Length: 216
Image (cartoon, rainbow, N blue to C red; front, top):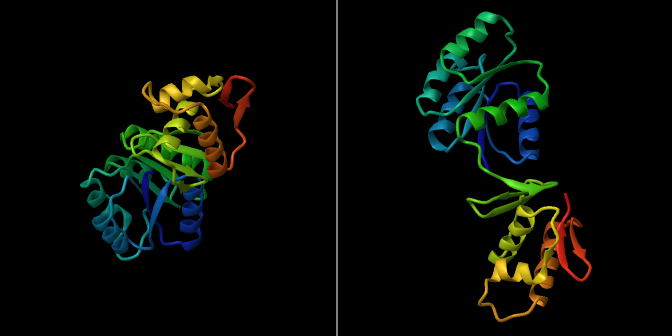
């Protein structure tokens, strides 16, 4: 999952941002001043920084070039709403700018857009609160990683890739276990039940006399 550093001296705002980012699946780091933010930046791999401009120890404008040197995208966050401050931050290389007070949904949308433009958005798929990160072969439920066996993962991915389509047991057996597998379709039933239990979902439906379908 993408890693976001929040550099903000107001604890209530910092915790609000962290909570909402965690809910949608981002990993977060925190810093309450510019000096601490720089330490985190130098010791952690970060995909995006949310940077308050009015910070103790090292101001946001002074910290911004140091962040950009690492080719990390930045969203500026500040109570200043003057056009000069916006223009200055953007001209220095910030990717976006949002003023306090802000709407959380707007902030989340801007984060997603900046990550996408920067090519740092990790490709994911899934349904409801289940997210699949195919490159990492990881699955998360409500932000928590779920341990799946390789075959459970492959079966889930097939169902997600064919969402809304009834997949026969024989077809699932062929796709997940390949042609050389000598088992029977009961294997598919067992793995589907494990997926339902681990993901606590009723979206994997049994299609009578056919197989299974992941509902939209």
